[in-house]
Amino acid sequence: MTERVGALPALGKGLESCGVLVTGATGGIGAAVARAFAESGARVAVTDLSERAATDLAATLPGEGHVGIGADVGLIDRHAELVEEAEEAVGPLVALAHLAAVLRRRHEITEIDEADWDAQVDVNLKASFFLNRAFAERLRGDGRGGAIVNFSSQGWWTGGFGGSVVYNATKGGIVTMTRGLARTYAGAGIRVNAVAPGLVKTAMLTDELAPDVLQSLVDQVPLGRMATPEEVAPAVVFLASTHAGYITGATLNISGGWLMY
Ligand SMILES: NC(=O)c1ccc[n+]([C@@H]2O[C@H](COP(=O)([O-])OP(=O)(O)OC[C@H]3O[C@@H](n4cnc5c(N)ncnc54)[C@H](O)[C@@H]3O)[C@@H](O)[C@H]2O)c1
Image 1 (tube, rainbow, N blue to C red):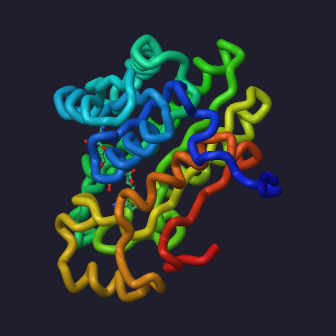
Image 2: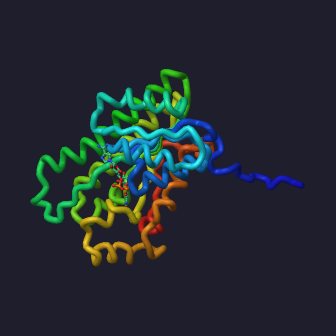
Image 3: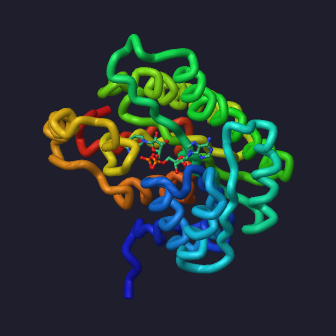
């Protein structure tokens, strides 16, 4: 039988038995990302604030060798330890999918205080830089290549909706930081990309957003609906895999056609 010219190997090619670290992994999208990596044959270090939830999720993933780790990514001093603990459990890491983030909706802009600003900037942006760096330095120190997939949002482009200006400022920062780190670590064979989902059906989006406001946003999406987390996860596996070997510094728009760039 003639092999189809240019046929692509399976999506997770290159990730079989490799270690990946997923933060925010027990959240709506994170759980789907952890599962998609596991289905690709990777060994997944599942991390989130609750150790119990992380351990429970790790136990339900297909394949073997997964682990749950409780960690607050806001504790920057612990990042190197987190990466080390993950490697001890799942083996040398090839990818970091970094989803951990917080959204504090404030429908009146005058209600935003410094604590709101700090909480979102600290977790969403500051911690992202230091965790990306801890991960990349670990790989570079070992002479290993790898990939980082950060989570931005449609809001990096639109500025956001429904009282989320500060959150979206952090998501803009993620795009810029991803580009800078991609340039920094390219020589070490470490690719750094981001995904920018539009409307994904999770608690973060739907909690505290009036149904009519949410519907008015969905009405702007050519595909006419919110994404499921399972529709976002394969893009993360793709960017982490050898399929994306020539992609770095990119921000992948996953918005159902809402934004077109
Ligand atoms: N849902 C959407 O429509 C949407 C759209 C664009 C981007 N995003 C992004 O996707 C990612 C996942 O969002 P989601 O919708 O699954 O939200 P979610 O709230 O379900 O998940 C976020 C996870 O991050 C964890 N987390 C928060 N603070 C943490 C900390 N200090 N340390 C460790 N973990 C922490 C939470 O416990 C939670 O499990 C986020 O980065 C979010 O900004 C979501």
